[in-house]
Image (tube, rainbow, N blue to C red; front, side, top):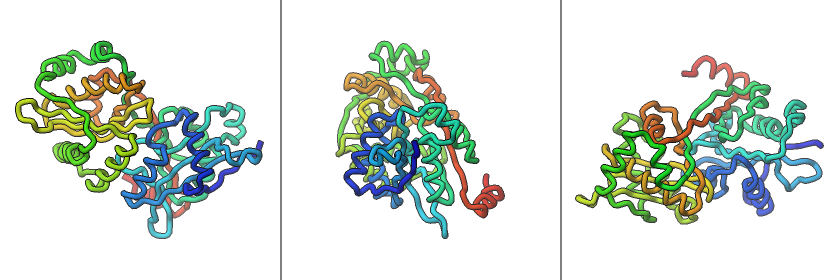
Length: 328
C-alpha cells in the first residue's frame, strides 16, 4: 500500500473533518493538537499555519498521520516554530502502524517526516510522549533528544494527596483554610499577571507577549478548552495563585500558572485536581520537568516522570553549517 503526503488546507471542511477523526483515535490526542488551539495561537502570535497529511492512494480523505505546523519566514527560508506555552507539537499518528512498515521505511510517521522536510528549511518538533519509537526520525538524520514532563492520575482527593511528599501534604493541610478557591471565566489578566511575576522572580523573560497570550486564553475559554482557577487570601481577598487548565476532556494540562511566594499554589492544586477528576478527567500533565526547582515542586505532588522527544533538522546544507557553527 503506497502512502503519500499532501499539503492540505485547514479551510477545507472535508480536511477539517478528517483531522478531527484522526485526532479522536490518535494516541497523540491533546488540546495542543486541536484546530481550535492551533488557529488561536496562529492568529494571536502572528504565525503561519500549515497542515500536512498522510494517506494511502485508496483512502485519500482518511489520514493515517498528520501535522499542524506553526511556521515563519527567516530570510529566504521557512522554519517551524514551537510557540510559547505549547509543549507538544501537533503531530498525530493513527494506532495501526506495524513494525514491518517501520523497517520498510514506509510507516506513516516516516512519510510524514519526509513531507515536513520538503516544506521547511529548519524544523523543530516536540513529539507527544506517546511517540516512543523515534527511529524513523533518527534514520532520516534528525537530531533527537529527550525532554521530560511529570504526569499524575486523577484519583480521589484522599488517594491523590496520599501520594504527595510529607512536606507537600503538610503545606496543603496547614494552608487550606487560608484561601478561597474559585473557578471563574474572567481570570486571564490575573493568571497571566501572576505567571509573568513568577518568571520575573526567576529572572527569566516572559516567553510571550502578555496581551497575545491573554487573547488566546480568552478565546479557548469561550470554546471550553480552558478552565481558570484562582486562590484568594481569605484575609485580604487578593489573588495569590492562578491556574489555567487546558484540557481535551480526558487529560488536563498545567498550561499557564503563577503564584506569589507561599502556600497558595500547593493549596490550589490540592483543591483543583480532585475537582477535575469529578468532572471526568483521568490524568493531569504538569507540562515540563526540565528546570530543577520547578521539577522538584511537581515531583513532591506525587507525579511520575515521563520522557518525550525534541526532534530537529536543517534540510539545507548552508543551514546545517550555520547550526554547527553557532549553536549554543
